[in-house]
Length: 182
Image 1: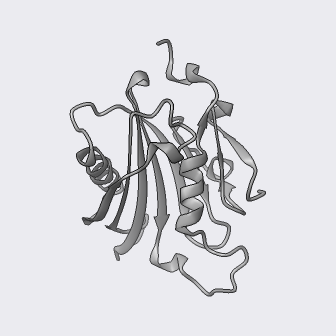
Image 2: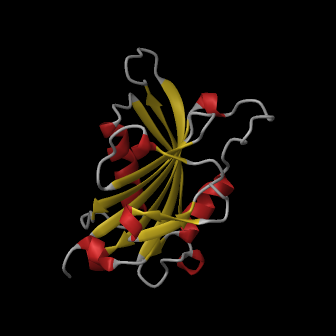
């Protein structure tokens, strides 16, 4: 994929700029309807965009932590550790007019891959964009397993935090009907 091309997500209801070489995982295996998942062609890195039910019982930084711990539970993480949680400036988001609050979280989760006993520390970066008018929490996740930081001469190169930032800031809503009748 071209590094600066807007790619349609969720049947064109959203679009975002994906990093160079992103492979749509739904071309390889089933992906839940509320997710768009992309993997790096060479490393084990992945990017996930999820439409989740708004968790109105948690606010602010606690909401970002809630979703991080929830992802850890779903993935069967043996340990989760939050390294940082920061508010994300709404000014920089393509969704700024629709997003009430935004948070970015970095942390590690100890996860064993399917059919493997040994758990590895996976670095996760998450952005939580809260859209209460649509009863939706938009969760974007950048998974960086330890094996993804390979040699510098990989082609294409491993994705960076800058690539994830571009995905988050470029995410644009085109069709609010994806959320159902309002």
